[in-house]
Amino acid sequence: MRRLLTLFNLLMVAYVVAPIVLVVWMSFTPTMLFEVPIRSFSLRWYEELFSYDAFIDSAWLSLRLGLISALAATALGFLAAYGLVRGRPPGAGALLGLFTAPLIVPAVVYGIAMLQFTNLVGLYGAFPALVAAHVVIVLPFAVRTLLASLEGQGPELEWAAMSLGARRRHAVLLVTLPLCLRGMVSAFLFCFLISFSEVTVTLFMAGPAHQTLPVRIFNYVSDRIDPTMAAVSALVVLVSVALVLVLNRLGALAAVRK
Amino acid sequence: MISGAAGRSALGIRLGGSVWLFLGPALLLMLAAYLAPLFDTTIVSLHPNRPTGIDRDSWTIANYLRLLDTYYGEVLLRTLRVSLLITLFSVLLAYPVGVWLAGLGPRGQAWAILVYMSPWFVNAVVKSFGWTLILGNRGLVNRGLQSLGLIDSPLRLMLNETGIVIGLLPGHFLFVLLPLWAALKGLDGNLRWAAMTLGARPWQVFLRVTVPLTLPALLAGAIINFTMNMAAFAAPALLGGTRTRVLSFIAYQVNLEELNWPFGGALAVAMLVVTLGFVMVAQGLTRGGLGGGRR
Image 1 (cartoon, rainbow over the protein chains, first blue to last red):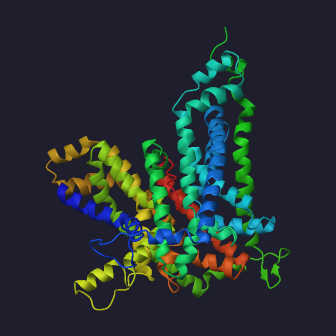
Image 2: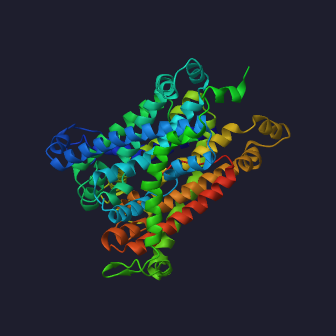
Image 3: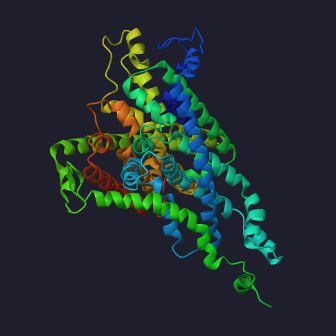
């Protein structure tokens, strides 16, 4: 019975990882056709990739957007999580619900709302508006990760610092923040990962001037199948997988599992 | 001597009103860049759309009534059908995976769960591109079957509902798997022992002890999975093709191609209300606040 289950799970695993593995594999083959076994190995799609200015631009945009929004979300997320854990304000549950609402509200809905709203306030296609949207989208991951981090350590050390005369901002910056370092790093990487693979909201609201890597791939793939696409996609996969492995090592993935 | 809460308050250790300094920045962001846009779209959806633009002076519910048109009804039915199929398959596949997972050692479980989570972390567009390489007319499956002489002409595996189901299932499977896995791990092993010592066979133990005790978690996961399927955008757009359009793609066309924002807004609000309704039911089932993940 156990063996049958193991066999079933091997097939299931093969099914869920198949498209990911295949994209990476394809990016290294010289032709667009599958060869089994692989007879040749080629980096020509990668070479071609670097001659496409559009993709370089998109990669650069994705990187900037990911770094800025992850940084902002980690900062806001730390402050918010600190307030929720140490302050226990009235309506803490509702506040946490608000901060994590983007996990539940469909991306299509938020994308439409941002498209219409940025037009209303005259910020359509503006980079700051896109950053704000990405911070909103990744904030739940920062808040959850840092909540777990802050709950994991009691307030006693902070109290000790304050009873010895430290002001709160010093106690928070010099005692609590260093103790949360692992949580901060996890939150930052997590936010970057989510921003880096976000496609729906960006596609709805960013306008033609700001095509992130996933949006660029989406627009390309809808038109034609181009092997260069496999190289771009493979790069995206490798970045995501590397980040997931680091996050796993940091024990940060448990925050999503709950 | 002062002690406890009073002492902390005297030392300025309790946060008190300054808690809002900490919550303020995130709260402001959520108000300005989240609640305000959603509110604006709700208002827009209640205005008529004129050739000159949105008529903000008059109010109407016509945009919502239009959702009941035959064309949109058909799209809604297709979206429901595809979403339900994915949920059904996820539920059927979840027990064999969950039971197997729960039987592994801690390290094995950690790695296996990571593998099952991986499709969720990888961009939907990239995964869909991978599926076109597998399911397309000249994809892996069709070429394999043809070279084995099993089929003459390629099977149509994508640009239809089949493609959407195959492509969406792996990424959304874990919303069913994770709650079930947690419930299976939390199961009191003695109950199964008790059933066995009373003469129950393994399959009877499974059907009459394990399944009833883990059913609420499974159902809660299934509901979250269903709402994710209903709202998915990129994968159905790429794997469904031009004829197999789901609700989210219609929302894209109405908002970005037809530029009919009142109607597009009504579509968004309807999706939002339905999703929130389902999530509340799911949370009621688990009591612990499932939240889930997203996408």
